[in-house]
Image (cartoon, rainbow, N blue to C red; front, side):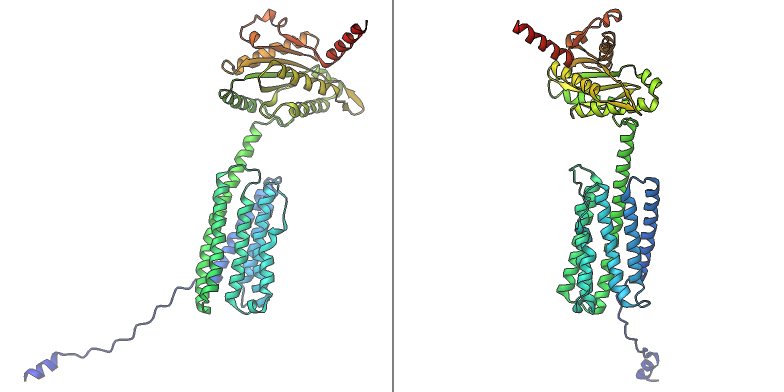
Amino acid sequence: MGKDETIAEIVVPLAPTAPKKRRRPIVLNMTTGLTIWCSEAITLATVLLLAWRHDRKSPAYLIWALGFTVSAVGFALVAARGLIPDIWSIQIGNAVALLGESAWIVGFRVMDKRKLEWSAFLPPAIWIVGVSLPWVTGNIANRVVVYDLAGAVGATLLAFAVHPGDGRREPARGQLGIVFVALACFCFGSALWMVLAAPSLDEAMIYRGYMALGYGLLIIIAIVLNGKLLMERAERRWRAISITDTLTGVLNRRGLQESYEILVGKGQQQPQKLAALLFDLDHFKKINDRHGHQAGDAVLVEFARIARQFVPRIGAFGRMGGEEFVAFVPIDEQSQAEALAETIRADFCRVPLLAGRSLVPATVSIGVSIMPHDTVSWDGLVSFADRALYAAKRAGRNCTIVFNEMETAREPDAATAADEGELVPTLDDQIHALRRMGTLARM
């Protein structure tokens, strides 16, 4: 066997290699994605509906539940394309989905008790007008552009709706607004790419799938942040309930103590005095016994209404318990506290209070104590106001007694407490005195 033959024996011809298959791009199944979103939207709508049934005073829950339900119906129609007529899956389905976005906008405005505006319905209106054009109806790329523009407008309106109208700062609102602005930019960028790139049908479908994925992620983030916002609002609401008197709507004792601490803290920045005005309705037990507890409650509510409208915003007013109320007011001069006390007393005396057809006579005695901010304390201020109130009762009721800084600087004996303090002349006394002075001047 020759050399060439040996080589021929060991050389095995290789089998022809098969041509490599070109990898197809990953295409997201739109029907599956829309079905998942529909199930999530229905779940969220159910949760919001249950929240509304638990708290009927929050209609925003019901409106958002309606929005998620409408959105789910719209996307279900879109997912059913090929099974139902195109007018239902394209024109009507997308319009209904965008109508759900309008409901979310309305929900935020209702939550903040702001006026509703027709602009909330711009997203479905843009889609309905755009898809009615012949060159949009027959071209999927143009339909995507119109839908993305409608979505960008809706996200922008959501960002404005989230912004509080009263200027209060809430971290969750700021974060939610950023997400909605990002969503608006996302939708606008998608529309711009469709216009500039002019993709083929296959490329448009692939790109649309990825855009829908990003859109869904931003919506999920927005839902989480909205849940955080609702939790913060619920926490503030329960806190407000915990410091509010349920009958009169003014601060309770706990709320008064918190407000007092705030007033004392502010007083350290400016040299002022702090006055405590302690109110006690005269013969309140007799009112309850003679006219009934409903009449007594009405008297309490009416007094709280009158006093609250005169106490300045820089002060605090609340119910200590029973028929006792107190106001803490920063002042510069004693006359300010006297004028406030007498204004409330005189106005309350002049208001006719009726129990059925019977007139309920109601008056109030007031004890006022004044202390400098650098030496003020809750116990001392309220204790001296209570002693001044006791002195007002001893003086015949329906009057005001003031313990000024000199009297609150020392600790009086209990036996002499009723005899101290400064009796403030009532308005009727002052008018009577002026008339007598005029008579004497004419003599």
